[in-house]
Length: 282
Image (cartoon, rainbow, N blue to C red; front, top):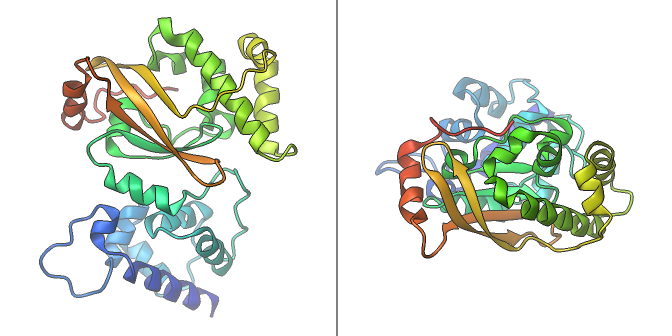
């Protein structure tokens, strides 16, 4: 009965979404309301046969990773996401845990940002989802695990992460990251394990971080002008703008070409270059 209800719930959620709402072309002839099963499977990164089995309530218990992908694909609210996990017999994700739920409003906006690099990150700089142009410019950040999921952690513990920015900008980036992290830690509960363990690890492993943390500088990164290294396009100078969720734990970042530079033409080339020559920060 539980898996039957799971399938019925997924079907009801996909039927309420129009293809254009999630960046798909509707096409001239559609026989079903909302999304088709194969479209949901495509958005969630699942095989069509596997998704069909889930929706039929055939007894397949989807993994937590698949449930998170389905929640993003179907633009579920937090309450709907929790209901989906309960129907599947899976524990609810911990706040700030390894599979954070992307705010559906931000996911919707990200889908509509097709002509500029954009991504959704947490306040601890964990990348949750990237659009194709962000992947092409910044590299794929989805493969990191543990504390390395945070770009701030990689910035202070892995020299390869710093290849993203010119060396002359490293000091300014370090100060900005630490000041933003201090603001995020204060915004969270004092006992928040994710922020606490991240800060403790960085203080122990990075003298640079420890020195900056001791300065008690606080500044939320709302907008920046950045220079980004790209293996094919060279240095791309952009404005980085942010839209925050109500609780401040997630932000939608989008990059626009800086005025007075040649970055507009370079960003136009991203769709052609794609991810073929992008160096993924390790």
